[in-house]
Image (cartoon, rainbow, N blue to C red; front, side, top):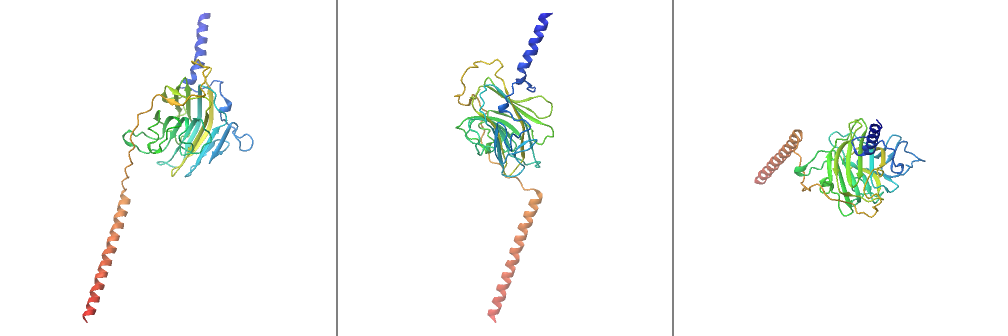
Length: 327
């Protein structure tokens, strides 16, 4: 009887330790407050404990809005403490919403990078970055036969030498990705980014089921310690509200991992595999609608009529002048 109880206890204990890497909420007590953002946001005045913000970011009692649903806005929040944890689970509650039904953009990025508080062209942050970017892209740039639907979530690891190409949706440098319709939900939407034993796992909970759905998994990803978490967003001709509701970072180093005492601060970010690249194909010009075609034809017809009338008037005037010379 005692052996049975001991076995049951081991099973329960094991389930507690492995829950962060399964499709379940991380309910462990290993949350790192210095890397987390929870309500109430304000400390003293407009300050955020452990976080800095820049650009169009505003802080309210219910959300941190990186960009409003207006054109040409850019904002970001950055953690003030470098992450010294080798294995971690970053869970972000967010909301992307706006008035646009068919056209909206551009999206936002969750960062784990060397340089913080850097404005730039990659969804409001620095290009040629060093570290990890999880891109939640809402605008499709239509690039050839391998098109995927948007919104789309992808990962990019950069050692500072690669350019993020918006015209290709970053697909020639991404590790992996998945379609994820995370926009304009009434319920809470979440993303989990787990980095454990050199494996990156990105999952979502978009349907309010309180369970993770794996988006993609990539092995042999090397990330150093000492980098910073952050999130940035941008709008262009298209726009959306990009809101961060909460950030919770869980330390997973208490799990059994190899080489826990290894110094990883000098590791160069890298990944063993990338998605196959694809050639950039220029977008085809959209065909005109029936109304536009009719209006264009009417415009051309009016121009032709005006030219014909002017020609007749000029010819008649010339004939009249010729008759006067004869008399």
